Length: 489
Ligand SMILES: NC(=O)c1ccc[n+]([C@@H]2O[C@H](COP(=O)([O-])OP(=O)(O)OC[C@H]3O[C@@H](n4cnc5c(N)ncnc54)[C@H](O)[C@@H]3O)[C@@H](O)[C@H]2O)c1
Ligand SMILES: N/C(=C\C=C\C=O)C(=O)O
Image 1 (cartoon, rainbow, N blue to C red):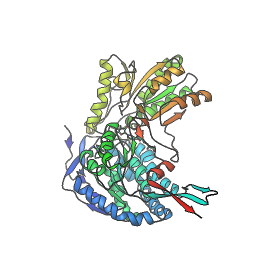
Image 2: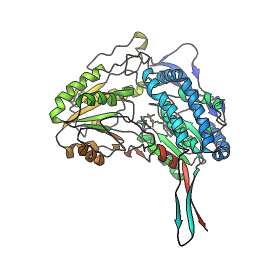
Image 3: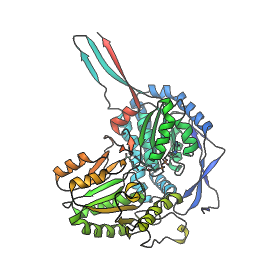
Image 4: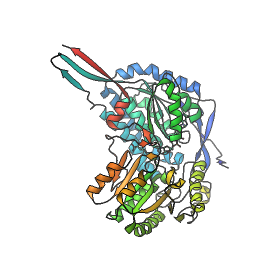
């Protein structure tokens, strides 16, 4: 059972039309590092969503008619205000999500600031198409217009980072939005709302409705006045959203789960490869959609890789999120911890080998954190390609390692899952890198690195990992309608 913290709890309110509006019912939110309730999140439903959509509709004409430069100025002010409170945001993100303060301070919050600045600036540089038709004497050109009220739904793993990844391109293009963050991690979105008026954002341009997917989320995606939904989350939820949106033919962007392979060829720089693969497998407790979940290693270097990898995984310290010595904090919730643990249990039951972590090493946390949702980085070998461990998204600090013999074989095995989000290839042979990258079914392929991101380039997944792409031009296209104008001169 979760324990309850005595004393005053943080109580969040919805942000609608530039004002905080209280809600009559709430959902408890837990501090994953202790298991204590520390915050109450509005349990919004149809009524609150209706109010927010109305506010966004009212604000749309004026915001859409502002120049991109004008909109960029407001967005940059919001970025500055968040940046000035970086430490406060980082600590709140850590307490809400379980991640280390170091990770929030160096990744989540700087990246949220960057999202706002990047999309503010990139909106100033988009061009449209133009063509002349001779001898008809016609000039054709395109115009891009904002779509209207955008529904933005985000998950719990990178709360402010993924929310700003959607809010920034949506409002930069002139849309107004109703956002719904995950009910598990709502605090930094609420903190950002507290800065919106000061940044000069007109009331109703950004509205945030907090609550569960089943109530607030469902009301939002099925609202007839919301023509566009950008969703990041699980594939299962995406299917429900697609069904609920279908009667209205809504425009959808779906950024979903992954089962990302890393492929290590014998000529790889093993030292760098091991260090980066430990990071790609376990960063943020393995709770990043881009985390490595399956590592295929060419047989001649497999024993050496495994020895070094297990040793490095043991060095990836797990514990209290505020301690700078720790690389990992706690998983987001008790339910999620149990789910991730169940995969390791399955590994034991199926006769796979667990080399370190869960069930092998001892995790030590102070007495006051005993109720927290901690789990050590866990390395498994001997799982078959068709096993649930090798097929299903685990989304926690568990990685499977397996040997391979041939290039063609490993491509087939890497592609042999329903997902297709990201892959990593380790080799010094440029020809091979190009050949393999081309054949991998993944929206992103990193070679000799991981998580290097240029926001100008498309981001998204193939197969069950998503529909559409976001980033730079792709986000601009998603958040605008294009129209062709023909003039006979
Ligand atoms: N591809 C990416 O960019 C990316 C990034 C981060 C996370 N993810 C994926 O997200 C998943 C983990 O996040 P999660 O557990 O929060 O996902 P989730 O699908 O359970 O929830 C995501 C969001 O959708 C809302 N939601 C749930 N049911 C809904 C419904 N019926 N209608 C509308 N909204 C609903 C939730 O409240 C939450 O805000 C993993 O699968 C992970 O891979 C993908
Ligand atoms: N959207 C991005 C990352 C998503 C991570 C998922 O957990 C990004 O880097 O732009």
